[in-house]
Image (cartoon, rainbow, N blue to C red; front, top):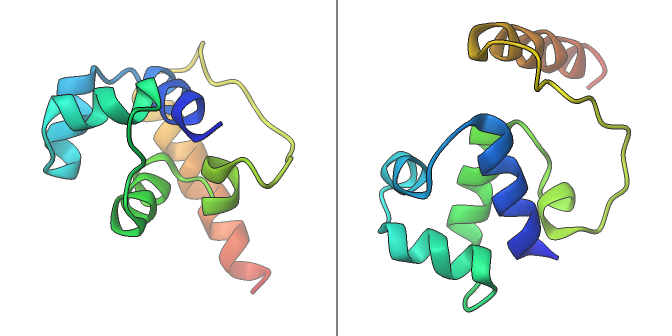
Length: 94
């Protein structure tokens, strides 16, 4: 479900609801409503979430099952480096 995925991605990134809201230029209550399943982000915000968390829209929408890697033991800097490397390799396969 999209609400659970947004919360999962936010927590994996180490953001509070307020921090995510600030990054997306929405209110914290909007993020809370998304995570509670009370509302759904518009396409604009789904795209922004994809870019921020380096995931596909299919992943956020729950229509795709892909291999996952847990980065819990990495610093934010290390995780961003891994994301950058993955993005580089994705570009090579286009």
